[in-house]
Image (cartoon, rainbow, N blue to C red; front, side, top):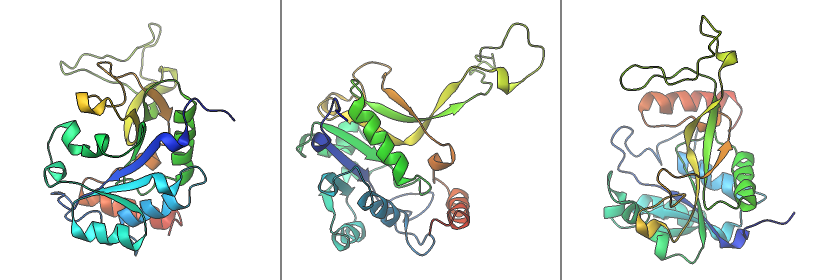
Length: 231
């Protein structure tokens, strides 16, 4: 199959740090006998699409750098500034003008249920796309209201009661797979130079997008991971 983009032009990267306030040391905290960052590294190494030489971990903490070295994977030594909670895009992703790639696919390590097949499919979708960015999303048939509690969902005019089966599909951000041109990051853009951005939307399974921000999510994800025989 011929693609619009060249796989060798794509940087695959995961940002990781230990300064999480809600789940301390989340990336290396024991999770099913391993840890979140190790799970992602193992997945990428098993990919049938991603060249391992194109995969980098963006790291500041010595413990995470040691993990990268033990796994023999590339790492970008990020600054203390980039590891802070809030900062400019071009500071957080300071590798944007230092690593020799045209595009980037960012993969979150906070989604242990994310399958390598999904990551590979996202990659192939981006390779085939003529757009400058792609974004993982979840398809929903649901009702939504705005900040003034006014319904913004498209309610069928003939319908008297709620029925999600009749709703038009909307798409929710999955926040685990992103693709972008590298050169637009220096201008503060991400995935697209438009405001708001208009990347290709890659529809994925909702469970795979389960994100760990809090301890209860960590515990829930660990239980699901065990029950799905992912260990």
